[in-house]
Image (cartoon, rainbow, N blue to C red; front, side, top):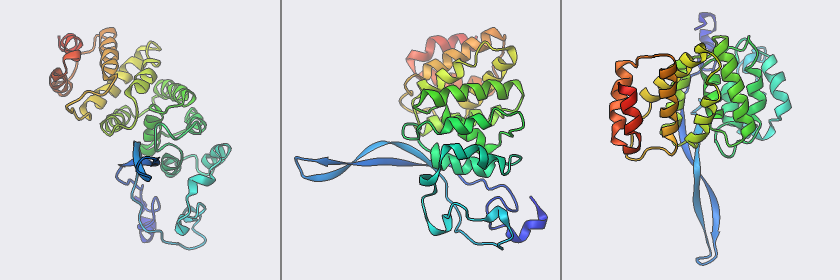
Length: 275
């Protein structure tokens, strides 16, 4: 917290980091039914969302709170985003990108199938060794790992390899975000498993980082009646990693492994992990 800015505590990111609760909203499109001659809503997935406080204008000299995206006028800022501007936007305050990452999570990366390729441009900024991977940037990277576009997922792989090598990746938070995204059916798990698998066999450091990522993914994963499609690939990757590094799983992870035994297709690989 910045005590000197306590009078601005109602403004996001002014006195302290703004950490709104991550929520997920269903997405629909209208489809015309020619038999009933009516419109019906068709579910197409979920998108990330955050609740923002009511916009309050501050002193004109307080540049940080300039409403440059006209949120105070209820305009849809993401419609005006141009990907070539992302590098410039980040350059304005490179030491603290969390507010920008939050904005871009909502503007260009809130859905795995409809977000397009723009996320790859911002991911390139994360390759710089001075880029601090904060909470919202970690979420951006996690969401990009489910993105429909191969270009985005390929860049996510590059960021993961680089950030792990430079010890900039918050593995616990990244794994937690992945678990939450899987719980909310954010995107196909197969896309995520491909991203993580491409970070394998780079170095022992990368193996240990991936193990920790999957540890926290499993701890934050809520086991339901049906296993997500391709979730087995995550477990198989985990087994391969712990075998290569002669890693002993923790009691917390062991508990999750035992609970996952309800899925018959996983029992064989889980028994190997539990040995």
